[in-house]
Figure 1 (cartoon, rainbow, N blue to C red):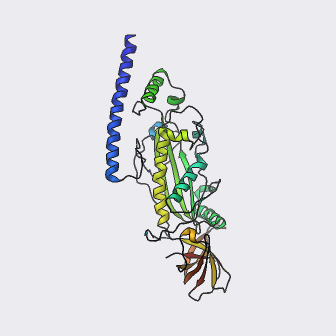
Figure 2: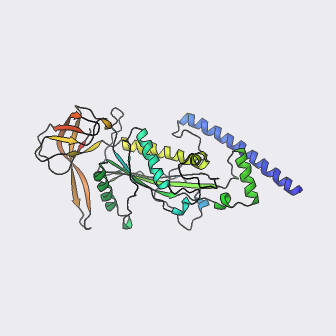
Figure 3: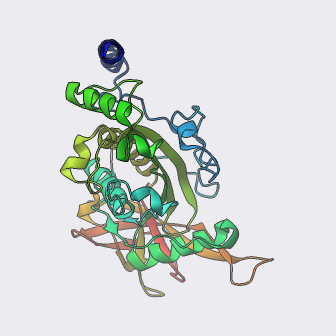
Length: 373
């Protein structure tokens, strides 16, 4: 009995010390946010760290070893053939965007808490945040993911994105994958021993998080932005974080109860960080719209209007899409943009489209695009 009492006292003392440390860390984090103007509007227990997109979890690795990934600069992949950069805030035109599903690399990771709908709700949340940041129109949501070609053939992925962009009249294609949602130690939440159960109950009662809490759960996802006209990659990055998952019931991803958990708060912070970076990449791309025209006509229809921020009197450059076949692979080709050295002046602007005329004499052939200066 005496040993049990001492053990109880030690546990409570450790919990109190951990709570004090957590409060100190929280105060330091808040102070740091005031100085650095962090993008995260709430205090993350561990600031989300973007890791190298080439890293992935191996089946033989222990989940606990991946809880605290070593910070590595994540590569930002920019298109070589479309090296545009228009980050001025003077005229922020909104792009059309198509958001695909984010399949789960390890579907069994969704068992804990019944988080299977994450592959649809995660991209939907990202799309909504992009629209709220005025980078895009309200996205079109596709319940399917980009089909992964054999060997990860990038040309086939580009062709697939280009077909989707043409079909849905979308300038930007946002796709991705949920890499990891595994529990570090599943038994800590769903089958705890007597000691672990007591520690978990004490921490939940006090509403604190400490090093004694072993109910960590990972959350990692990969995003890719592709140009909808050429299929070329504009941006690729992986985002990682983790949080405490102490729910034993089927909560579901994105429900009010999910966001109330520490894990949900970490996911929320990571989504805000990702949407801010993706929004900036999209903003720095020029506004491009499809053109409906007939050979020899000077009056054309531009698939973009007042909803995108266009006005009557605006001028746009004329480009042509050119397909270049592969010398080594059958039915594979790359799409390039070629300037026609002509301008389009918008005469009538409607919510979703505009009517323009070509001010420079040019015979229209092939698939044409209008690009904002």
